[in-house]
Length: 176
Image 1 (cartoon, helix red, strand yellow):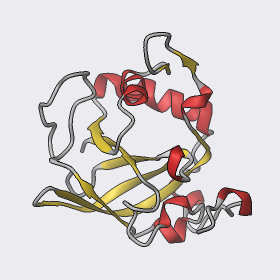
Image 2 (cartoon, rainbow, N blue to C red):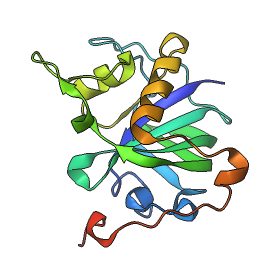
Image 3 (tube, rainbow, N blue to C red):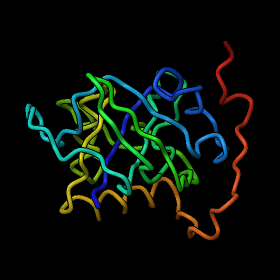
Image 4 (cartoon, helix red, strand yellow):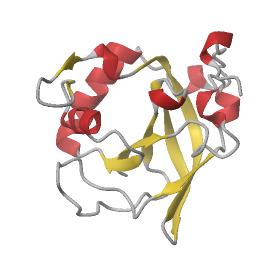
């Protein structure tokens, strides 16, 4: 099993625009679809593709803040994944919402570019702001989870998360 970080538009790339919802039921069985040649490594300037997303892989989902998203919002399992043409489609299952979504504003700015986050992957994604998917490599995974728990809160166990709904405040939903 691999772990991936997916950064997407919460409306355009979450089929049926579930990406702004704080209700697990809207995310469960949701489909993410966006233009991609496949996962990459979190290395500046690298175009080498990482292994493809497979059934059972762990997914961490970040929604673009500029488009009504809240940053890191969910952890899920890939029910299925497929690249057809240049479109990556992933169906989600076992979704758990990050208790307290967070974005790059939580981190100190790097004077050169991006932010200091405490994890190589998030440092890279703070510079590379577009839609995409990166492999979370094993040597960075523990640091990544530590940052998630520090800023996003402790995740409920799978049995506690089952059926848990988090309401979205009206001010957090884009009208349009």
